[in-house]
Image (cartoon, rainbow, N blue to C red; front, side, top):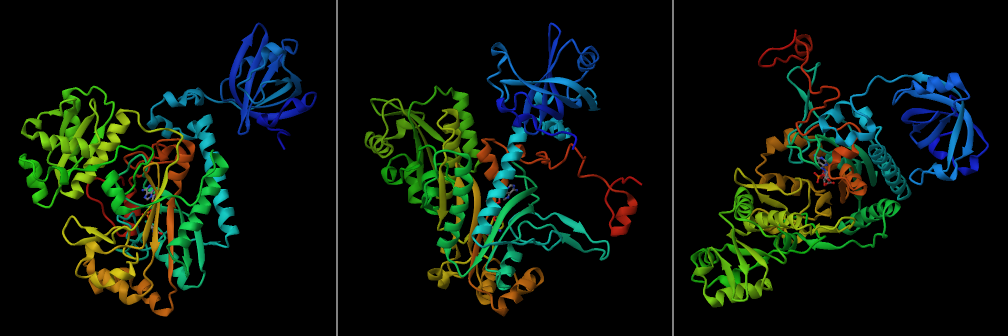
Length: 587
Ligand code: AMO
C-alpha cells in the first residue's frame, strides 16, 4: 500500500502516530518559514507542516503546485491553540512532514476545483473529472452511492430480485423518441435503447419472479430540462398478485428508508394522496407543489350572470373563469404584468385579467364592466382582502388550469413563497387512462399497459376520456419522482386498449407481438412503479439540476463537452452499417 491512513479519518486520537498519506495539494501558505499545505484525499483534508530545519524537503514543498499528487510520511502533532481551524474536521491536528515524494505533478489547471462554481457549466463539464474534485460534487456523488446502496439493501430485505434487462432492444412506448442503434449484421435494421424496462419487467412476472427491481439506465430522446437527461437512472420495480396499495406501501417504505437516513424530521407514513382531478383544479398541475398555498379558485358560479360578456359568455359556453389571489403582492409594474400575461398566452390562454382589491371593490382595466354585485361575489369567492392582487383567466377548464398552474409557480417564485428544506410528498391517484392527442384521438396518460378501473371497462370505447386508470404518481415538492400502475394482464383487454389508441392489430403485432403472446401463457395480475433516481438524489442533495448529481451528464443540447459525443463517424463505419448520411462525412 502506498499509504496507511486517510487524511480525513485522522483525529486527536492519532497524536504521536507516524503516518503515510497520499493525496492532492490543495492550498499552500507560507508563514515566515513555516510552510503549510492542505493535503486532500477522498475522505477529507489534513494540514501538512514543513519546517525550515528540513531544508531540502522544505524547498521541494515550496515548489509544489496546486493539485500535484504527493505522498508524505510524518508525525501527527497537536496544533497550537491559535492555529486550530474549527472549519476542518481535522482542524486540531497536523502532520509534521519528514519525507515527501511527488507521485505526479499537475499542469496549470483550466480552473481550480476550489472555485469551480464560478466557472461556466460547459467548462466544468469539459473537465468534469476536475469538477468532481469539488467538495460539493464529491458529496453529491457519495450521497448517490449511499442512496443506491440503501435502496438495494431495502429491496433485498423485501425479497426482491435485481435482474438486468437488455439495453439493445425494441421500442418501448413511454412517450419520447427512441435512440436507435443501427445493426451491422442486419442492414436497415435498428435496435432501440429502452425508454424503460417496462415490457421486460412485465415478462418477469409472466416468468413467475413475482418481485423484481432494478437500478437501470433508461434512454429518451426528448427536450431536455433541469430535471431531464437523455440517459437517466430509474429505480424500476414490478410485483405480482398485488394491487395499488401493495406497490404504494413498498415504495413508501423505500422512500422513508432513504430520506430518514439523510434528513430530518422523520418521514411520516402513509404519505398523503390527492386525486388527479383535485390536483388539476386546485394547483393546475398533476405534480402539485404543496409547499405553499395560492390555490386556483373557480369563479364560474360567481360570474355566470355577469354583464361582462367575457365572463358570462365563457361560462355559458361550458368553459370556466378561474383565478389566483395574491396577498402582499410585490409592486408589479406594467411591463412585469404584461410579461405575466405573456406567460399565460404562451400556455395557450386567450388572456390574463388582473385587478387590485381595494376597500371599494376591484380596481383593474376590466372592472368598470363589472356590476358591484359581481365584484363582491368575486372578492368573496377569493376570500380577498384590500391590498390583495387577483388574476383571472376565462378559458377551457384544461387551459385555465394549466396556465394558472404555471402562473402560480411564477408568482410563488417572485414572492419567495416556496420554503426550502420542506418535504411535501403527495401521491397523485385516479389519473385518467387517456388524454386527448394533439393529432386527434386519444393517447395514453401513462403508457398503454396501464390497467383501467374495472368499473370503467364498459365505457372504454364510447367515453375513453372518462375512464380512470389504476395509476399513481409520486410527487415531491412539485417534481414528479415516479409513476406506475397496475397493468393489464389480459390479452383481450390489452388489444382493446390498442384499438382505442388507434393502434391497428398489425401494428400491435409488429411492435408488441412478443409481449401480447406472453399474455396468453399464464400472466399473473401485476403492477409496479419506476422512480427517477437522479431526481431523488437531486432533491436529497438540495440541488436544482439533475446534472449536479450525475457524474458525466450531457448538456441541454444533449452533448458531452468532455468526450465530444455525439460525433461524426468514418465513412467506413457507415458503410459497414449500410448507412449513408446527408452532407459531408469525414473519410
Ligand atoms: P415514467 O415515464 O413516468 O414511467 O418514468 C418514471 C420516472 O423516471 C423519471 N424520468 C426522468 N428522469 C430524468 N430524465 C428523464 N428524461 C426522465 N424521464 C423520466 C421521472 C419519472 O417519474 N415504465 C414506467 C414506470 C412504470 O409504469 O412502472 C415509466 O418509465 O422521475
